[in-house]
Image: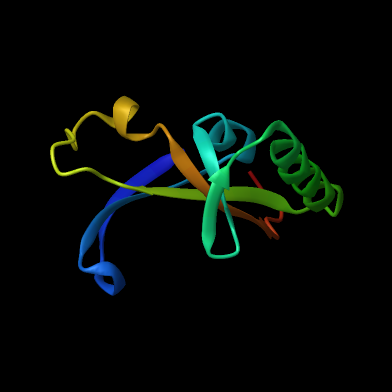
Length: 103
């Protein structure tokens, strides 16, 4: 898992945390999910649907990578990675071709 802090220039330079990582690991840190333009509660059914999509991509021999985000509050400690990487909003998952390396 990896996270970065950025300014969202399209939304008045709001400070955002954006993270990527293994879908199962990232989903454990998400409490909401992006559905269309809205962030909704990440229900058990939605979580299962996401994991099914991940399984389908993996079944096609694709490496999966999930993406999530959340706006940061003004007083949050930007050095406390453990605290920052919680209550994320699941944005989606991608499948990429990642052929084996010689080593």
